Image 1: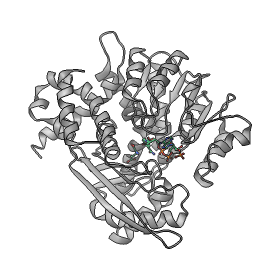
Image 2: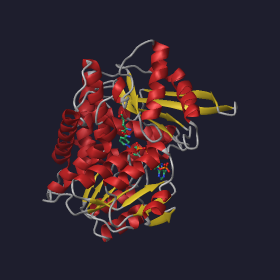
Image 3: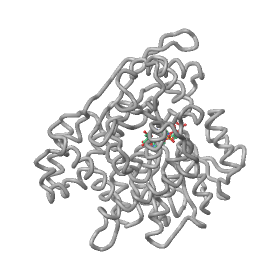
Image 4: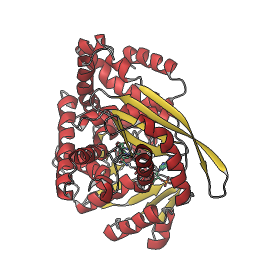
Length: 446
Ligand code: NDP
Ligand code: 2IT
């Protein structure tokens, strides 16, 4: 490791003990940025990297609620307000039993660069809770969301901090959170994104992360004269991002052969077509069942406690969670002929897996670039809320598409190496950094 990175990381680890995912995210970014900063000393003198790795504000709070049996439950709530140099804090809320400070700090840190790449005026933040929505009734989820917002509302606002969804937080949860915010503040504002279409939401926001990821992959493929037509695609996850990535890939002529959840994956060699995807959406969004039921319904193979990366494919799109591709799986993907990895989830590839992809010189689009379509469309929702005018789905989709193309161009600008290889990791990290860093310098030592 570069000794300057080593020294920087020693400081980060000492200041943030035990926050492994945060260390991982900061290290990946500093490996791209430290050499760049050496060439651009103004960033060094202003200690931008040191400042960017320290949240502007960290909120941790108690979330008490009553379950259906009348028993008191206590969860922990968080909001990390990471950076507001280029706009209000912006980023999702994650409800999952694994949520802790280190995971949310990694997500908030990534969000700063991602939001900058979108070209829209959004700072970075992330929040959530160790609450597990699985197995809870709608009423329990509502009471939890109301209690969570009863503390969070005093810290957020349409011009301050604008949360949205992430794992375990979709349309249902955003509805309950928005209702409580409105009641507490007596104000109808665009304080959350991912809202329902009848009450201030944007068309295409539910689709945006999966569609955007597919558009980004399309741009990467085009640099090698390729496209999705006839390609076999492995997708992990079966939630919001996975569902709409599956839809768009299929529309573009690709064949998606896997879908997964935290219990295992299904392999459908004929491809998950529109009809079968409808089944997955109903299974996951309405009935809240397990992906195993797909195998029973359509008579395909189910692999318990396994991930899809053992299946031969041309393109892999991880869309579940962090650290879901390890080094062996990365090697297997490359060995099996995979030439493009486009990350719908945040930090799905462990550092050793990223090295495998970069050494093999395949098309590798890191999450902060490839999955930025979700937050970009949240930015468009904020614009529509400010204008009090909704746009058509065609207009939003067109804007999303052009934002993804711009992000790709930024990665090419900052990531192209002497031999012509595009290192999208460097491209996204440096491309996302420059705007935030310049804004921080302009705003003084704050
Ligand atoms: P959902 O909650 O809708 O779906 C998550 C999916 O991933 C589910 O299939 C879930 O399975 C699976 N999953 C979650 N945790 C794990 C785990 N620890 N191990 C294995 N599988 C797991 O979330 P989203 O689709 O919204 O988010 C997926 C990823 O995309 C996350 O990394 C998120 O940060 C990222 N992302 C989301 C955006 C958005 O707009 N929603 C925007 C940009 C990135 P199970 O049901 O069994 O838990
Ligand atoms: O990781 C992400 O970019 C998101 N979960 C979406 C954030 C947002 O504010 O739309």
